Every structure is written in C-alpha cells, then in structure tokens.
Length: 237
Image (cartoon, rainbow, N blue to C red):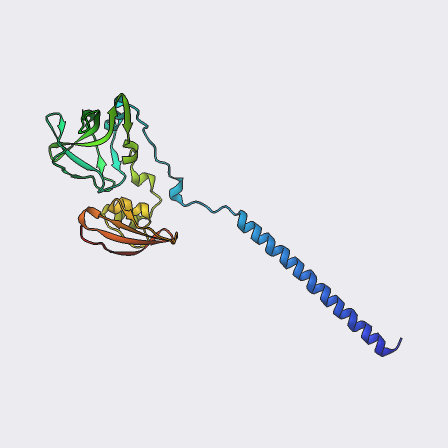
C-alpha cells in the first residue's frame, strides 16, 4: 500500500467517523427535544391559590333552614348589585329603594320572613337587618306553590373573606378596605373593592374589559392575562 493510498483511506475513515458522530449527536438531540416536548405537554400547570379556596355554603331549603343566616355574620359577595328596602309594619316597601349593599359589607341579619310579593302567586323571602336605627329588608328567595327558591348562598359569604383570601398581599387588602382599585389586582379582588362589573365582548381571551358602576363612580378596567393593566373613569351613569 502506497503512502498516498494510505492517507486517502485514513481521510475517508476520519470523514466517516465524523459523519457518524454528527448523526449520533443529531439523533440524541432529537430524542431529547421530543422528551422535553412530551414533558411540556404532560406538565400539570399549578393552580392559582384563589382556586383552592372553597367557601362554605348553608344550602338552605326552607324558611327554617335559611334562618341560620341570622345566627352569624355574613359578607356581601358582589357590592352595588343588591337593593334593600325599608321594612315597616311587617311589610317591605318596594316603592322606596333605600340603597345597595356594599362590596364585602358585613351584615348581621335579625330574621328571615315571608312577605307578599307583587306576583300574586308567590311570597318573597326577606332577610331583615337594622341600619341607623331603622329596619330594612332584602329579598333572598321566594315561595310559590309550596316550592322554595333560595339564593342566599349566591349573595353572601358565611366566612370572613379576609380569612378565606388571607394569601392576598397586605397592600391589596388595604385597597379593598378603602374601596379602591389599583393596577395588578385580579377580577375577584376588583369585585371585593369596587363591586360588580359588566364585561364587554372580546375576541382575545387574554384581554378583558369590564365596566364597574362602582356606586356612581364608574370605572372601566382592562385586564391582561387576568390582571388589571389599565384603569380609567367610565361614562357617567
């Protein structure tokens, strides 16, 4: 074998080894990438702490069971949504609205009673409370043809929201207690601070715009990925 042929054979072997090494490296990289992709697909995204909060409910089914509301304080879930009326002479005065319940307002009901309803075939279930030395009432259900419809669990927390959501930062709770909204708060925190909101339609699921009546001081808030990114005054009522 001539020296020149020997060099050619060595060069061919070196090239073959390099090609084999490159191929092996590519195969290993491709397998590693596939494993990472599969792991990413199967990864369980941790839930936000709010999702782990499961408020207790009373599940009332008649007048006797719903009277549990009067045995403990409750807190309003959505402020500026529910209207209450004067209660005089064992009757709810629906002609004269007295006001709206405030965001997470603490309530102590005196009793729950049945009252005549404008709809002649049913009775209103009314929760009574005292404010400024006067008695007021709020409808929390109805009775028609022996069937109760009670929605107090949708209206009230029976646990202190500050304990339920104690994982929220101190500055967020300070804003809520001052009934103020600030950037970075989420929708539930907004409900606690400024009450109910009316969302607009959106084609982008990561962006949501909500108008809040806010007790006569309307705000329009744009959320991006669930957090308030823009806060501006809303149109006058």
